[in-house]
Every structure is written in structure tokens, then in C-alpha cells.
Image 1: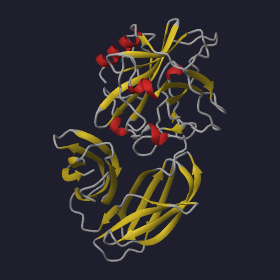
Image 2: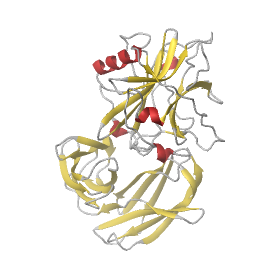
Image 3: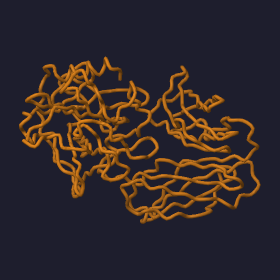
Image 4: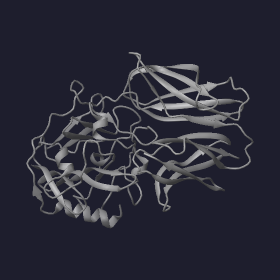
Length: 420
């Protein structure tokens, strides 16, 4: 989003807009059917933010674990959003301070769809939604009201920080009075959180958690409101990688959440069809924070390549398989993509590549027109050798794409086909 577009956005926030009547829903709680879920980036890491904003009520707290910097929840008809702030946006006299707290919706393929915001300016405040041209007010309140409907401020238990929560009926994000974002509970989207001093000083536009001149939705996890659902997600595998290290293969994987997870059976295949269990790693059972796992395959036999997958086992005995990753064993004499398996794929494929030296690696996906539609790795420090990274294109339409591997010295392109 350019500075001009940001100015237009906040000019809209200050302009007269149509009101829509809405009855606030019950806020998520640990005892309710729907609960807050920590929002994560494409690598499964809880969204973080440096302590860099002033005043503190606009600074989203830097957090590596729960209580997370930002969260989201959904009860089937209302979307809820939460930010953890350094300081309460309600002053000691009980009135709100000037400021804007917002979340933007978008996808890697279509970009920005719209913005939900809390805006306090002078004596009044609103919770509204905008598509960049039109706006709808969902809830309005006087700045002297410390407990308005549709927005909530409360202290974080056991900390000196504060939560600001705000909500919107799904109908307001789908088709409001003036704004028609078209978002449904099954729309694939990313949520991009931020704050701004714009309402207090229109010449000082500063968004927390929003770096650069544009919002890069491809760097965030794509979700649907229905997948958030009850607030507790099943075992969510956010990363699964394999790479050769000498004569061994190292496996690394990460989960965002786990429910009744007994553990992971590690399976290996020499042909991608016939599988053998070679190990087991116990799961965390129930967890709402990031968990990292590792396994070393030291019983490698002579073969040009090996395939690996995880068989995740619940405590009730139910099972689910991970995407397949592949590691090749060959003389490394170039930085090049060696394979993508499967290809055609739907919606995941494992990109295998070799590096002839330690390097900063960027791995991206472009469409047939050459436009970057997804960034899988961005300047990631990687050692020389063979690597395998899983690419998920669930948010993209079927078609021909190109995987781009860029290092300090080389650039390599590999064609793939997404067939849904």
C-alpha cells in the first residue's frame, strides 16, 4: 500500500459513512465453544513485531509465544480480532486516545480485499469496514465510553500489556450497506494487522506490523474463517523439510497447534509408492503454541533418492499423512532445482534443489505471465548440499507456474503444473 493509498484510506475513515445496525456477539473465552487462535506467518511462526512504535498504545507487543501478538477467532457468524498492545488505548481519565487499529484482508493471488478498523478521532470512535473506496460503520461510540459495543480493551493476565479486541459480523465482510468484500467463511484469505496515528495526525502515517510500501499477503498463512472454527485447530503441520547432511538425512517439521496428538511415524520410500516406517517421534498431545520436531535417518542405503512422509497418529487411533518430501543424492556442482514431486500437483509439491556452496536462498513461484504469486523462502541462509521444501498453492487457480530459485550468484527456473 503506497503512502497515497494510505492517505486515501484514512480520509475515508474520517468521511461521513452509512451506519449499519449490528448486535455485538459474545467475546471468545477459554470456556466458550470458539476460542482465540494465535495467528502465524507462512513458516508457522507466531506473528511478531519489534518494540518500535510510540506512543505505546499503538505498539503491538513482540511475542514469540502465547500470549501472542495477534489472534483471530470465529463463531460461525462473527469474526473476532485481537492485538496485544504495550499500553491501554484508554487513558487514565477513562476516555479513548486518538488512534487506529486495523486488520486487512487479502490473498497472495488477488492482493488487498478490504480493511476492518477501529478508529478514534476527537470525541467519537467507530468500528468500520472499507474496500478502499466505500466504507460502512458497524459500531459507533463516544470516546468517553470505555466499554463500547463491538470493541473491548482488557489487561493481559500476568503481564503489564493490554488487549484490544474488535469484531465484525460476517455479513458486514460479505455484503454490507456500501462495502461488498465478498468474504465468506470459506474464503481463503490472510489477515494483516496494524496500527496508525493517522487519526491524531493525518501527516504521520505509521503502521505497526506493516513494513515497506505494500502489504505482502504471500508471506502470511492463508486461512478461512471456517478452518479457524472452534478456535482449537487439529494438528496443523506448518512446515516439513528434509535435507542431506553427509551420509544422513535430517528431517525437520513444525506444528502450529495439536489436539490429541499421539505422535508421528516417520516413513521412507525409495520409489514414492512402497513405504516403510523407520522411526517414531512422540507428539505434544494438546498444544496451542508452535512445536518443532526433528528426526535423523542414519540408515541410508545406496539409492539415488529417498522419499519421506509423516503419518500423524491421534490418541484415538485416527491417522493423517503429511505431504511427501524428497532428498536426492548426487554430486553437487551447481545451485539448481533438481525436481518437484509430484508434478502436476494439487495443492502441494516438494521442490528439491542443490546448492554448490552456502548461500542466501530465495524460492518463489511465478505465474505464466512472470508475476510472483508466492514466496516460499526469502533470503534464507542455507548450507551447501541437497534441500527439499514443500510448496502449498491451495490459494492459487489451476495452471502453469514456474518455481524460481535465486542465490547470490545464480537464478534457476523449473516449470510446474497446478491441476485442481
